[in-house]
Picture 1: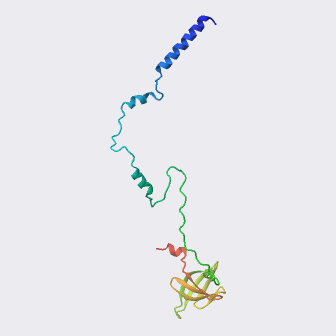
Picture 2: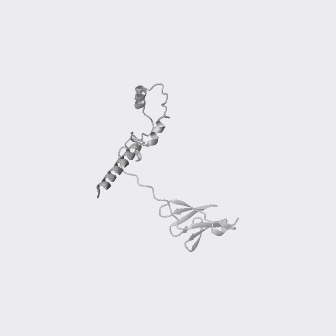
Picture 3: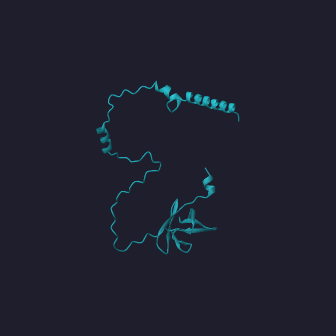
Length: 178
């Protein structure tokens, strides 16, 4: 390289440096901020001192609601359980649970009254079988028909002596009629 080219390159670097530093502001930051600072007016505060008495009062007052830190994203812990009085241990024999209710394996779907004797007959369906049972008779080898009502039949389980009420079930054809 010739000397002339080196001098020209040095002059160009100096001109570029001068141009760069002359356009750069003296205070670091954004250029527009300096212009907006001239429009700033401070608030008119009557008492600029810190009121420590009010701050102390706020710190001593406890709120009745749940305390939660608003700067933590996790949910607050669950509330502490209320202390319940301990039950005294049971002394003596335990009472067995009551037996399950009587389940009659048949549906009561109707009844009839004999005109000559006034005796009531109930109609039960058990699977594909239709049973015609009079009051006081047994059916399905384990059940006795005690009473026939207008909307239910009272049945006694012979082996245990427990009673059950079997509701009257309407057929789909009867329920479709107005």
